[in-house]
Image (cartoon, rainbow, N blue to C red; front, side):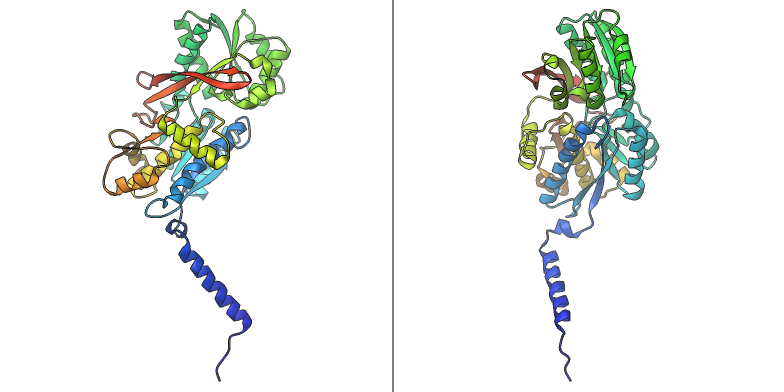
Length: 415
């Protein structure tokens, strides 16, 4: 006697058949095991204003790569996010999860130098995982004993200090007080500014460190205001920086301000308002180029607004450079990525611009040299893993908006 299929078994077979068709219709990249890289960003804490823009920029690169066929013969690239909380201890714990649990061979991050340095020395370097920071600017990163596993797509503060000191002198300041976040970022930039400001005949009347997450900074402001300074240089991040600025204005400690990249955020203008009008600052930033224009267009189309924060170009570039190195190496392991990085970003080679993944893959597979020229500028790594040539932007707050006025080239040699 012939058996007949039950309605339930027929439904099961139909579902299986439909799923098989669906899988067959998916792009090849979606059917293979993903290549995973970490994103170690400050989604909470003092730098939380930067976290989402950094992640969006990195995600944009991943989405473009996957839309153009994926990596290593069609595998999808996957970004695994971990939150540093802008805290060294939490940052190390997050990095350990990425390395030991998620098994990523490379990480983009961290943001704060005070997080990147312990992450590198205690987690990524011992485990031979490549670390590329898009925002850690401390000069201490240059001198890490890292076996060439630490890179950054952002310029060192040794260079920013030169431009910042020159700007202060051009503004007519002869006496400037500095309040800086007590971290490698804050200390390194404060020292770089002071040494270069002296060369312009200026005097730093006080160098005052501060600890994060305090309710009041009036003691630091009182100390900084002594000695008749003409302006305050605030080296901070938005969350605590806003508190310091509000108390500086309310207590009439200062009415003229200089800033660095950590305070280049619309949040501070929204919080403080008119007292910041006419303030000046510096930040790693290149003038408009075809590459940066491409990124601006891509980002605006994807997220509905132009890139609002600094270091977003560098975040995108870090992911794209890592992906190119993986493709060049033919495998996703830390040592292989490290050894291939300079080959895909340093000259000579056919220029690859943001979004040109298919072009790059075809050239690499044909045995041709490529040179990625990123949204932030040439990603040309020197022997220390720093970008060899970069640009510092000079910005001001005008009509309640951050406006870049000009750009100055900076070179890694000699720092």
